[in-house]
Amino acid sequence: MKLIVQIPCLNEEATLPATIADIPRQIPGIDEVELLVIDDGSTDRTAEVARTPFDLPEGETELVAGFHTEYSSMRFALIQMAEYINMITVAVLATNLFLGGWHSGIPGVPSEGLPGFVFWGAKVSVLLFFFIWLRGTLPRFRYDQLMHFGWKVLIPVAAVWILVTATGVALAGR
Image (cartoon, rainbow, N blue to C red; front, side, top):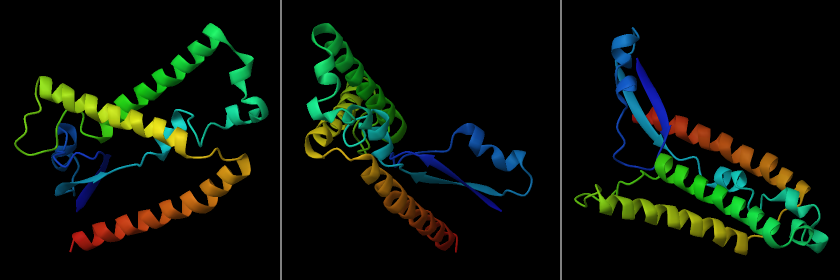
């Protein structure tokens, strides 16, 4: 029997961690372990940092820009800094977990030392640019539009994607 391990990662050079690779010796009946590399998309990361189009708490009082008029000076600066620190944290985690961290992903290009730090910084910067670009591009959803998008679009797409992945795994096993 084959055990398929799904890990969220975009690094093509992904290998099995030692604990997962030892499964065939620990669990009777499993002959081999296959690694299936998947990506979870960026929608959840955007929703986590409460950026447009998922910043519904700020959108409730949108008639006069919500908290932008309630706070001024240092309080507003602290709110904005907290928002950007959250964005940077999510970008760093996404880079490390899903984009291969400091690895370049290009065969033959060294990834240790300063080049690795440059690759890591470039990946984080691209994600931060993506967050800022989305905020400037997309409109804010109303609650009913977001619920419609989540329940009637994203969930069916996720269900179809599960079927496509299962079919691909089944056909690859032949």
